[in-house]
Amino acid sequence: VRLSLLSQAIGNMISVFEAFSEYPPDVFIDTIGVGFAYPVVKILCPSTKLISYTHYPFIQSDMLALAKTKFKKNYYSGMLFLYQIVGRFADRILAN
Image (cartoon, rainbow, N blue to C red; front, side, top):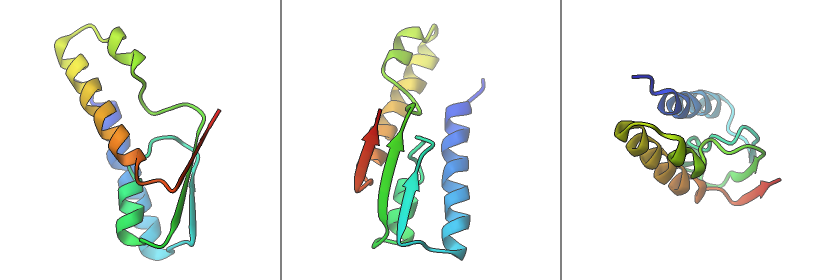
């Protein structure tokens, strides 16, 4: 079982944690659309303004329809649920 979405989410949190530990910014602009680092940003630097520009979302609801196994449907549903929660940490969200 490959858990690539979960791995990307964890990697995103780790890389932002490492960067913010060294150089906390006043403004954080995310352009990759993963979003799982947003809670890390707000925990480490609550005053940092967090802006999200999402060209292509990390996960989309139409992915659920493409899932062929029950495990994948549950996995995608869980990741989508978490993605919706972490998105609420952004101060501004832009999309195209």
